[in-house]
Amino acid sequence: MAAVAENDLYEILGVARDATDAEIKKAFRHRARDLHPDVNKSPNAEDEFKELNEAYDVLSDAGKRAQYDRFGTIPGAAGSGPGYVDFEDIFGGFGGMGDIFSSFFGGSARSQQVRRDGRDMGLGITVSLKEAAAGLKREIVYDRLAPCADCEGTGIGEEGSEETCARCGGAGRVTSVQRTLFGDMQSSAACPDCQGTGKVVQGACEECQGQGRVPDRQKVSVDIPAGIRDGQQMRVPDLGEAGMRGAQAGDLIVTVRIEPDDFFQREGDDLHVVVEVSMVQAALGARITIDGILDDERVEVRIPAGTQTGDIVKVKGHGMPRLRSSARGNLFVHTDVRIPKKLNKKERALLEKLALEMGEKTEDVTSPLQKLKSFLG
Image (cartoon, rainbow, N blue to C red):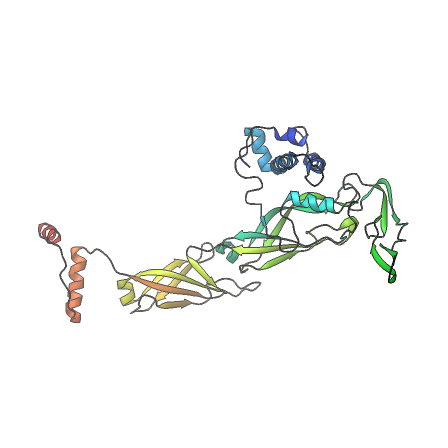
């Protein structure tokens, strides 16, 4: 969403500037029901619903709301920021509040058959390799059908009650007989009065329209364990789609994606890194210290004498932490022997002396200008 300045967000939602979070949430749901394209056939309904959703994105977030109240604008895209996630829709989850409302309307009394249990929802989050090594707690924000707070998920209003469906006798299905040329054909279908639930609500909750669930924005903290691998999934019970009128909720399935690192390359629980060593260190051997994958970790690497470019030095126990274990993989250091491109007079003299000692022939490639500089100075 571009900087919000043209329309007042509080006016879009129809709330006062001092509205509580609960009032903002309720106002959004009521306005969304009127504007959602599934029920509103006005040519402007889709644009107005999008505008409403963007207003809610700002006013439902304490930080964004404070910035909007102070400056009157919110830079950046709606729903963006460190807490928001991208939906992958791999387990029947939804891609945003618009799709949540589509499912909500699809579960209303107009539907002939309703799935009572909530569906699993899938989303993906991205972490750095260092975060995957250390483990972290990440707060994520997503949209789902959540239990209705007004009726505590029952779908029943204050003066209402749940009764056995008179049409199907609580079976949830009705049988019909059709006469054909081949005789009577019997078929069974979901009861249209109770949508296959066997129960009907008398005096339904106005907020959830008798479903026991409403579209809502959910915040949840997810613990990402140290050593998690790219593509691994975590299951958060009961935080997927809420079931209808207290039925079993689905789970939230979080898929973790790990960004490539500029320094380390991961292979299972092992890490690989390319380290530059000088030709002197490679020839004589050396002990060098490099940064490890964990914060403030320093790793000592022993470079053997005679090391060549491409040689690999193994450092045990300094790779990635093994998932749910105190052990760690190994670190493999790939050496890159660097030859200096420029030598001063003293360095060149020492190398020439070494070449003479080793009986190696060298070529004088010093330019006339370099020779003059050497002579003068």
